[in-house]
Image (cartoon, rainbow, N blue to C red; front, side, top):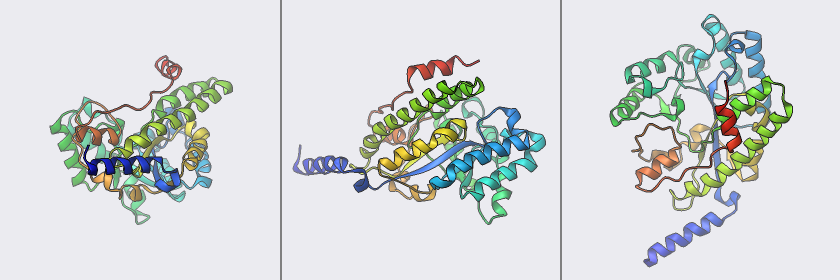
Length: 315
């Protein structure tokens, strides 16, 4: 080991040993699958849909997350879409939360062509773009469904070119965590009225989120010589996070995180890095950059086995 290498390694180790506040940790919170992960019938009933929305936003209000939320317009049934969806989106905007496009129908690029996928992107902005325009805002952020960026180099390049031509900024994810799996099991317990099981699932979810941070914090610092970059957290709008996100928020505060906008997080130099990962998988950008640097990907913790089994046993 050269003297220069030894100095760099020592500096990185010292930085990793610093308390959270000294590391100036920052996180941008994002919520996918707006208006909500719920039964289709709930999103066709204006009263029920607004109740779900308002309950979620009431939970968020005191926390000041500065979040960005991504919309699948198809989630609101066609008969109600042009009247109900603007009301839902306006509620989110009134709460100070920006909106992005998550495609119309959460289309899986692996099962279709780029042309069809881009058409779904276009269809996903029919209601949302005018709602933002009325407020002098622009629909600028895009989140890939399933975090799938294309399973071949040709598809990946064509998707990226299509999004760029439409003026979109891709919203990457560094902190991926399988909250959707916990949420599906939670909804089942909710439907059964099993409060004890809901509590068990929620507590397991918070513990899992802490384990994910234990993994991703030092893993991300390996890409930057010891400095933890601004993170982007992927969550979903659902009853699990309605009930348990405050504990996730508190977890981040306890670890010294500042909650920043997506725009602020993306100013971190790490987001300018190239991504040469091409696989049939949706993964954290930290893994993409690790692969691009020619280093071996190490995977984050999986949810507890009982959660996985419960998810797989759903009807």
